[in-house]
Image (cartoon, rainbow, N blue to C red):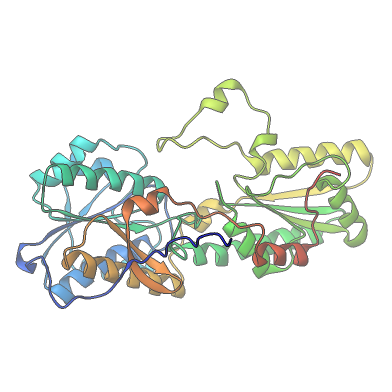
Length: 391
């Protein structure tokens, strides 16, 4: 007996509809950015404003400053195409952002009191979970307010959709850090260039940056556990590389190796404003461990570790051409869906086709590196790094 195939999923295709639900003259739209910075935030804001204004003649468009808390603690900023004209060329978010500050009752009360009937929420997985709650409360109150999420995360860890905006810019910018680490390592006697890239729960940036660069000797990601000492460990591999080439370049995602780093009971319980566990600096820990290893096994021999953390440089840059185009498509897809009367959805590409996906499905889904697929196999073949299986 063959197993029964899983049911096929189908989502509504994104794009303009023949009929619209909202009368443009009655639309009062709110746009908010939440969470950390990401290349392309200003492009999405700009394209939402220009798209609403030019495609549907909407004139009441407002930006909510300072993330979710801005709904109830700050006055909205009226936006127009003239105001946002050059925003796509700037990094960061002109509306300001913040983590935390999510108070469901205060947020929905403020949306209702200020007369907003379209809410565009730009953020990562935590923000999307908040958007699910806002949509649920609006539904419970039977308000005619549309809610749409536009997925943002540099880490590319939002599930279902092909990718999130800002990711390709991050991979491109990571090349500068890796190139600098390679120059430093190659210019030293027994030099190691160590680069920490973003990726709390997934290693997509580290993986794609490694494949794009080809000067990386080892790529460490959260999806693959590694160890330092013993046969098949990281130190044995680096020792061999230094003997063969005289230098090595190591790329590590920020979420890799967190279980190996000693921490106090208080550190284990620590959370940031978004409720995420606070990670320790795996790059700084690795640098320390590498120096201890070399002093122990190769006393009186020259050794250098140059540690580069480009996190805030990467987050703060404007989107590149590819991400700018992608941000425009996301913004326009969101506008078309909302104006047609859809609500409680996220827009994004699935196998290249732009679709409307229920908010709660996207909020639950995760997009981790599949270490059994061809991309991770490419990393292994490019770097010849160990598989970190204990023998």
